[in-house]
Length: 188
Length: 443
Image (cartoon, rainbow over all chains, first blue to last red; front, side, top):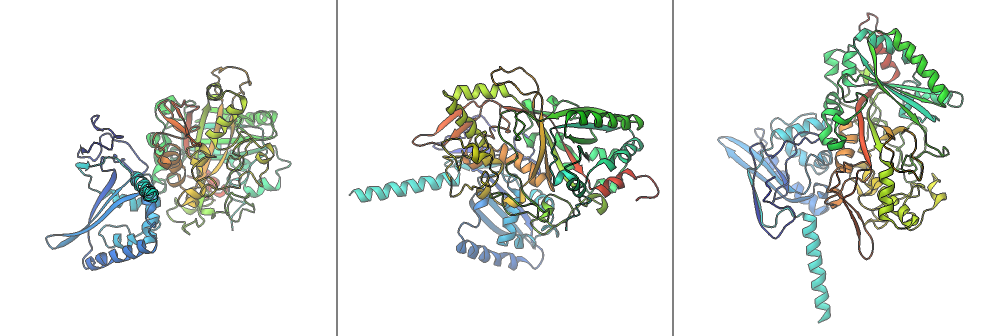
């Protein structure tokens, strides 16, 4: 990581240019190279082609996730997410799916937990409609992980207005602000 | 139904042994290796056999192989290819991810354990030293008869006095929390969780996800087998005691620091149940000494620090998918104990342990990579496991405390990895299958 970027200073917005490989130094995780934490935390961008005729199925699944989170707002907690963005776009006559997640853990570390969660919440239903997704994904975590890694496109620039701050820290700060504000109200 | 007459005893049974020896072997040709295996496999106890005669037996033998070892015995390429990637690569290739860097790096391992020529291990546990020496002489005779079988190294194991209970060189009571396998006939102690599906630990049975897929082939080779990570950890007892003295003015304070690092008093009493003072009776009572959780009983770590050893190695109700992360631990201590008042003498002493699980990458490697060595585990920021994590002197250990937490900086390394390997521990039929490879009448 470039020395000029400090990890513990959230007051200074920071940008980071990332080498082509997606990492500065090769560090092996359990399933492959570990991608670095950037001012925009950890994350991935998975891009894959949607199987012919399955675009509507993929699109319709957003409603399922919406309902799942409404039913249990903490159902994705294990992923330590900040944001998820699901995008469909066309290249020629083909449609591609982009799954972009920004989160606080190195994905390699909690891979099996994520796969488990994908199964429970039905995110895998989206994946099975993508070309090249392993048919035996339920019993073959390494094949699932291989698909994700092969379709991951690392960023070459990431920026954070409040760099390296975790979602937990943000929530703690907001909680403190709420408590402080309630206290001031009561003192009036 | 578990095939207890085929599973090697060590997976489900603990031998009442006070001594032992691990012998690490290399096969220079397949015939020699197979002749050696043919000569030893009948000495290997199944679970059933060990249980039937545990009172009268004096020695217990287990045999396991590295991936290179299976190749050296002449297992065909098609079968070798069906083993999981991490096992094929071996522990040395996985060193960086496991935290085996710096002082723990395989370059610093001893006994040729980092060598690709490491093919097999024989684990001998014996009731006493005389029996160990007798078995060793017998084994040497067998080796002498088998051309091309070479002993790379061996390690003698000895329990540390007082012998009434199992503990390591630092003095911590051991063997307090073990998962129990469904159908094994054992009852979990309170707090150890419900029995787990056999497939979490033994190949060929459904696991917690009701799967038994992706097994090494042919089935006769993998059924009733398991994978085993070996870790030889040197314990720097003098340095550990110095640290306690530097961080605690009275003996009571020193004991508390030792307890905070572990999450239990050295007696075994868990801090969740005995946060202020040691409780020897509690520590020795298996019906009580593991009966606790964290989420409600100690959410902020005021009793058991979030980064302490037992909270990392088994986060209990604060971890995800815990039933997919459990492991069976076996092993023993080696080296002469350091007398209580003696300064560090540089003698190599420690624990040499086996972690047994159906998936090295999902169970052992996860525990090592995430629980032991993730600096940001539980949002701790700059910590690793204080006992077995990779410590280079730059990390911290936080002890939550009211009104102000205590933060120890520059935590020293109390242990160093001195060897390790991944082994496949086959069932008894599979041992015979391996011994008969290359002959026309398999079985």
